[in-house]
Length: 241
Image (cartoon, rainbow, N blue to C red; front, side, top):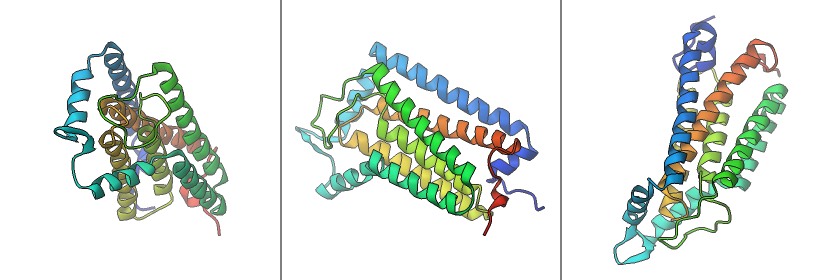
């Protein structure tokens, strides 16, 4: 078999065990970063930073008006919708259907459990911290849950990055792997930025969402690889006609 490309992380994990340590370190770093940030938020030490960023995105003298033209605000609403529960659920079900049709049934169930578990963690964190939404500026989108961490941001990271990791396992071409991962990262980033721009989240809510979601996606990659080595989910080459 040809040597795996640098972007074929699952294949490299099989051949280079040191990558396990690197990825485990990243997961630990993400968890530590999340809890350190949460501690700072609870103590109120991030208030000045949050307020400065939020106000910088508003027109001076009119806090109800985000900076930029009206079409920028409309684009932000479109971007924030890409992190909504309805869209992410529909996307996940669609990809699960693709995996089922490709005879990757166990991979499909792993994907559904991974994303579903990430959703439960996000909801639980919101109930645990119960941070109030920003009250400095009017909200540009309807909100009804607590603020920390940003659910849209964390669920986007969990969903898009996990989907990208699992789908890239099925794609042998390096350029397509890079394309899939780049799209996932960009979408996650845009969703988070849109939440702050619309005034519905503090910046630290979004940073926490990015950190926790990315850490969860990397952890899912490690678990998927471990399960594949034990024969509990299908390797990419097991696809059948």
